[in-house]
Image (cartoon, rainbow over all chains, first blue to last red):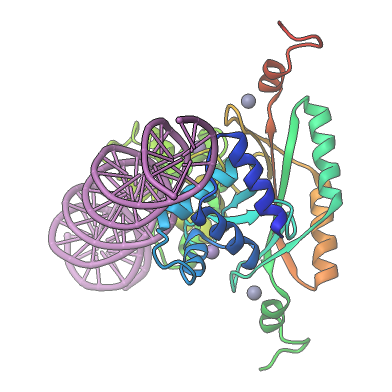
Length: 153
Length: 153
DNA sequence: AACATTATTGCAAGTAATTTGCAAATAGGG
DNA sequence: CCCTATTTGCAAATTACTTGCAATAATGTT
Ligand SMILES: [Mn+2]
Ligand SMILES: [Mn+2]
Ligand SMILES: [Zn+2]
Ligand SMILES: [Zn+2]
């Protein structure tokens, strides 16, 4: 978990940048929070430790982490127009999104990488990342919608 | 292609709605345009035939089509924060996005549906749609970046 | 340890891409 | 042709960031 902080520290130095208290705090917050938090969520949680932390600093840090490949931004249908930020490597790479309750579940699936490699070879392109999103009904919503055979009427 | 217009007409009637000239125009524009146009692009093209058409009408129609399952909204990294709208069924279901030139290529890949079915069974969820996005360098950008073995120096 | 240098931050104002309220327009049934 | 609920055009509002700038503060230097 401090692995992220270490990697970030290395990138900062390599670029002649500075490891500030805000960056440290945001990095720690990112590892403490559940998957794909929004900038607001990162800010709200981090502000519990430093109430002076500004939301724009959170955005700037998130974008810097994205440029360094340590964080991956995501957008989900039905979640308004805000971005979500996932720590690269942590949690699953793919997502299942319930179109009824908007719940987002993460998962990994090696087969997807195989599909990506196949596409890359056939089209002479390089693929650095593959992201699969499945849309449907989660177990609970599916059960509530198709209530046992025979219905409740 | 008028297939879309017919399906739309059916949904309109079913909901006690009206098939206006604007809706007809937007539907025709959608089938005439290349894949995943933005609302602005749909508006610009449709306005060539009806300069009074308002952008908000385009948005309203696009969202109505989305609710009817005839159009699927997409967001791509590196494309600012605007939405793109794909006709359901037309073009490929999956996308390759060049992170250098931002080009977006569409493709189909049956294996992805297989992955989706597997996930659905193992997690007791229903999957209605699967969307794979590959990020990398397109053939041209890859060639320009890795210029033959030996380099140009 | 104090200094100098310049990356980073906080704050406020600005922007892009929609979204919404509302009065005027009109599709379609009678 | 009328009626009237559905749509539209227009303008104002909103969301989710993004940016300019003066004040701060992290690091290398003395
Ligand atoms: Mn969300
Ligand atoms: Mn675009
Ligand atoms: Zn659900
Ligand atoms: Zn390219």
